[in-house]
Amino acid sequence: MTTVYPAVDSPEFDAAWAGALADLRTLGELCDRYGVRRREDPAIDDETVAGFEQVTERLNALDDALREVYAYLHAFVATDSRDDAAQARTSELQTALLPLQQLETRYTAWIGSLDVEALIARSALAREHAFALRKAAEAARHQMSEAEEHLAAGLNLSGGSAWSKLHGNVSSQLVVDVTLPDGAGGEKSERLPMSAVRGLAFSPDAAVRKAAYDAELAGWATVAVPLAAAMNGIKGQVGTLNEHRGWADAIAPALFQNNVERETLEAMHAACRESFPDFRRYLRAKARLLGQAALPWWDLFAPVGESGRAWSFDEAAGFVVDQFGSYSPSLAALAERAIRERWVDAEPRAGKRDGAFCMSLRRDESRVFLNFEPSFNSVQTLAHELGHAYHNVQLAGRTPMQRDTPMPLAETASIFCQTIVTNAALATAREAEKLAILEGNLQDACQVVVDIHSRFLFESRVFERRGRRELAVDELNALMLEAQRETYGDGLDGAALHQYMWAMKPHYYSGRSFYNWPYTFGLLFGLGLYARYREDAGAFRAGYDDLLSSTGLEGAADLGRRFGIDVTSVDFWRASLDVCRDRVAEFEALAERPA
Image (cartoon, rainbow, N blue to C red):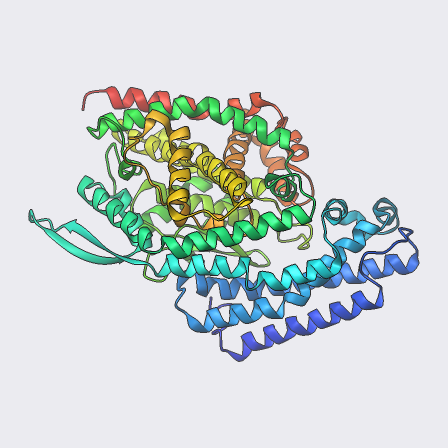
């Protein structure tokens, strides 16, 4: 991050901070000058057009400047939540930017009260932002009064944002005792951060996996009460605001934010439910390989096949670059640049949050956050996150309003890149290696299709009950187990599940409800696109980068039509899941062959 600013307390960072706040004050003055707030007269005159263009250009410029400042701070907080200086500046930034949230609320209300189509007809800038303006007009219909929206934004700093911060700090700083084999027939106790403990789930040693599982559950139990308070707090706030904003139910705003129709979500979920028996076949085959009557949770991520090849980060990076090159030189060059310029923070360590993500930093630069462990799963994760970075390159020429990509489409490039790596590995692997690669791919797909559906069920039921009262730790545990049994079924040992997944997953606390189902959409949409690539690589390459650059300009259905995809049809989702079914069958066949 020193290529951005030397340090959080550096003069260079202070100057960028001060510049952004000065631009914010200028934006406020412009909004006041042009009466940017809900109004009664929808007519578009010359002054309205001039005001729209000046305010929109200033808003886009400010968002660009703040993206860099926020991403810079978030890099430090995510990789070391004990960095008090970065935490303090982040909190200060959230408070300083409260006026921006208020101005954005006013801007949305203003757009919603104008004749948007007339504005688009009169302004070239409006035409360039037509999709965002039409969406803002719809969003305005779900706004409270200006005073209420401003109050909600202010209270969020000590409400939803605070609960989310609590979860991030508690989970990243959680350290637990793990009793592990010492390699000499005995045991040793180690005190490890939770991210490292979770990484042990990929160990080739069954005793290590079981010990890590036991330690993880014990660790989450020690912080379950504050995390339950955070869950109740954020879901209670969201439910109250949804009601006052006139949303039909908890899922409605998530569908709107993601530019996906309810019909599409229902079609996708119907296809997913049909696929659960196939994923259970995979899990039962894996259990047989591991000598288990039924697969316990601690063996979900156990390596199989030539198992367990231990991938170093350098090996993983080289493999990803090589496979990206099979698609295009520009994709390989992006991956090489990310490694060369040290965009990737890979190692698990104390204070670092769990999981993986890619964030846009500035222009065509990104930063990638991983908790790398030596399995093929991490190779796929690296490819996935670098796919996001490639998507960011294609969006670099767009304004912030134009590149506001919803999550289902944000997964397009990442899933495509992950599929390139997996298929290339399968094509060249020996049989024992192929089993391990198939396992890594199916493991990931099972998480995205089956486990994420369990999270969807869990969150739906939490919202339903939270509308009446708070939920206790035991009740959250019971709802989590119920959702896991409903989705995994007999694919897992029902007596060895993970009741604290609600405590571990940060997405429940993000303030964006139903955060996870877009990953399922992204996986299956990406597989559908990959099928189109295999059918006609030349035609696909000709349109793919433009599709990625347009993910903030069209809804999912319209973008899908570019490649002959109908996302409202169950048949499309079934066809994508057929890829997973074929891999399950291949995995079963390899698993049944004698060693």
